Image (cartoon, rainbow, N blue to C red; front, top):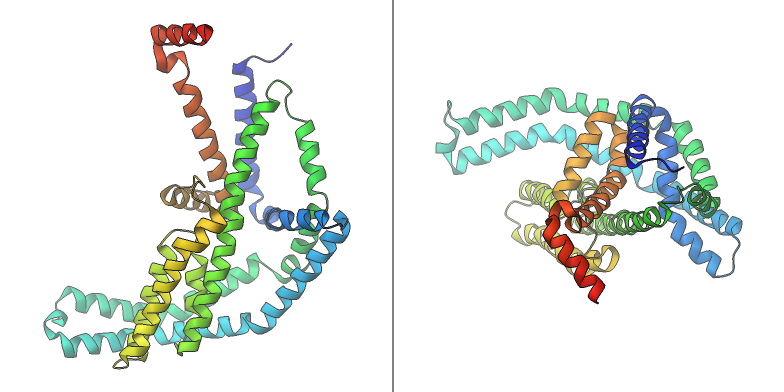
Length: 362
């Protein structure tokens, strides 16, 4: 005898609450497994393509793993030390930049920096905060990152988890499919496919867009000669997944630094601005339509809300699962809305009966 809809709702509601409690309680423990799962999900299409080319799943997984390790080692040796050094230098330079900005505004617009003025107090407070708290915040961030992503987890656990999940990905999907409630299996498969399409378009597509744009910004700014170009490019690429925010934050930061470094050299300042204008144009007209698509279904505001809520509730692990959960909730919300608009609750008895008669006549 099948369970009633009320019983099923109670069961799945209890399951959701239990999952949230486990996620909250074991966040740090689950982090390497979530990262490994995310990497396996990201690379599964590559493994499928290699299988279509004639490789076995094991060999395809091995090839992907070796290539990924080589790329990771190159990044660690070539990019990360420079990135950390530039970030530390930027933190140390910020107080001087604030003082230079204050002197510049005082020379050009003296009326704005009256001793009791709002701008004067704001710049003074910002300078004091950066001078006293900047290095401390940077050291704290490095310490937190080191404790969160320790060497053992980063170099051993995550790659091992990703390897085995990628190796058994299709088998795991088939096993989960076999456990679906038979009455609801077609609907669950349909919803799961929509969630996968939404998530794949966003995560894989936007991940590629972020990587391409971050690399472009960093290389272009370093060619122009902008100090901290690698850091600015990294920041701009990292937040590109939120439309326009990456170019806005990176552009403001880069142009602000360029004004201090190249003041009077308007060609260099214009080149920095042109780099972000070109990047935004290429992203909006080429990269995002080609790699992400126009029907992802994740509104930027909804994405920010999900990241904020899950980050506040579950910390870093919550931010990792925020995007897939947001995609799943979006698909479920559209499904519920569709069911509602075809139900008697929305149509009423008269409209429902009219539609039923029309369907029977057809």
